[in-house]
Length: 313
Image (tube, rainbow, N blue to C red; front, side, top):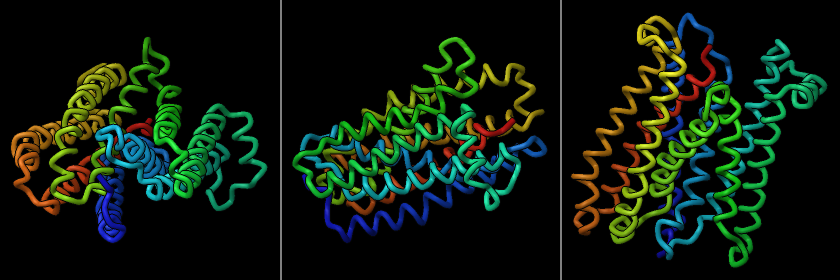
């Protein structure tokens, strides 16, 4: 089963960029508005893009596991891996500028070096940057010599890189907090990233008929993991239910929860109205792509809220 033509893939990529990135930034803007007057760190938009690109890499690397005839999309993996590396570098620089107390444009190389050498957040950022660079470089080499490459290696690097920040965040101070944070991050990335990968790679009605039900089977445990870990995380951080209204963090968390519930409802509806019809070859590839992009756009907005939540005081 081939990924499809270069023209159709580039069209899907343009749709994804035109729809998904603005949706993620709308989620960030909504999070900022809900958090006011509580402070929100300035790197929220960059973190959203970095998280989304990491999820896309994870999804593209995991896609061949949905069907043994699917081949890794090495060109897309190299592109998204490179963009992920750039986003993580900008994110790391933004964090360094905030710690130093200067605008990003005035951050000096010496101050950046001190941040990554002596501050734990900078050291974690460097480890993340190494992981993303490894993914980008390996995928670029694999594009040239695919017969000697394995997408599983990219999958492992992407998964480890995605959990580095969550497992060292605020939840790490709680019992099993790092485990819950890692599960939440990976499940959310798999849920979003795999569907985005389907939208980018799967082109024919026959491919959707085979692969969509397999994705649906993978998505169910991912949704359950995201829901359970998210509820536990929220209860630990908020404590008092009144804080869901009285604090900026609580309001962003409440909005994220509402959006997540909307996604659950949409997923339930798709499992009844989309998956069976597509499996029976009764839906065109364009209609399946349209439904996938609708869900991906809503997920991107939730990613924007989640990124804002992670940097809200």
